[in-house]
Image 1: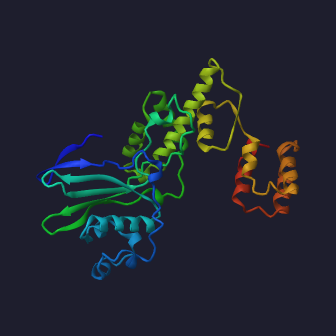
Image 2: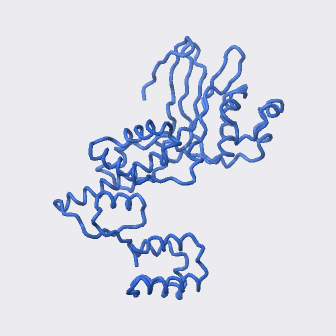
Image 3: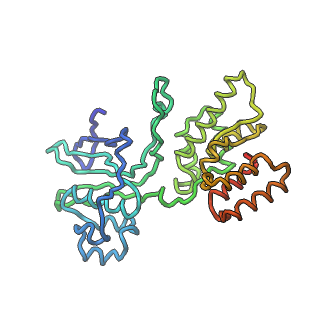
Length: 327
C-alpha cells in the first residue's frame, strides 16, 4: 500500500505499516511469554498510579488508560501485550504514524487479533487449490492508540476501545434477523453493508447479538443452497443431509423451508464421545434406526444414557435436541 499523508497536530505526517500482517493468518499472538501478576508484569506503571486507579488491570476503562504514561513505544507495546493476556485475546500491530519533519514515530495503534474481516474475494477464488484457512477475523473493535507527546517526552494512551468479543458467551442470529438478512441478500446488499445496518439499528456492536463472522457464515450457506437449486434447474430437494453446522441449518430453514433436514450419520458419530464403547454403540444404533415409534425411541434413549451415565453430558443433550434429524 502506498504511503499516505494526513494532517495531525498541525504537522504533516506519514502513515506507514497500516494493518501490519493483515493478510498473515499466523500473526495472531496469545502472548504466552508474558507471566506474572498485574504489578510485576509491567513495572513501568508506578505504584502511585496503581493506588490512584485502584483496579486490577483487566478492569481498566478508557479513563484509567489515559492516566498511564511510558518513556518509549516498546514499553507501550509491552503494556498492550500484558493487557491482552489478562483479558484473554491476542494482539496485532495496526497503523503507525511518523512525522514528516524528522521521521520519528509519534502514533501507534495496536488491535485485537480478530480485528477486521477477510476480503470476500479470497473466499471465492476460482483458481483456489487448497481449502481456505478458517476465518479468524470477526470484526472485533478492540484497540489501543498510543500518542507521543513531544513537550513532555512521553507516550500516552490517546484512544482505547475495550475488547467486545470476550464479553459474549453466547452469540445467535435470531429468527427475525435471519429474515432481515435473507431479504437484504435477495436485494443484492453486501454482507458488510448488512452488518453496518444492524450496528446502526442496535446502536453499537455489543447490542447486535452476533458478529460479522456469524453473518458471513449465514450468507455463505444461503449462497450454497441457491447454487444447488440453480444447478438442478430450479428443482428444490425434498431432503437435505448435512453435518451439524448451525449456520447451514438456519439457511435451510429460510431457503428450503419445505425440505426435511437430516444429519449425516458419519459426522454425528464423530461427536459421540462413547462411540468406541461397543455396548454404547449398539444401543445408540438402536436409537438411530430400530425404533418405530416415539415411545420406543424415548425408552431406548433413556436406557442408553442412564446405563452409561451420560445424562448430564453436553454432547448427549445436543444429540437429543437434534433427534428428529437423525432418529
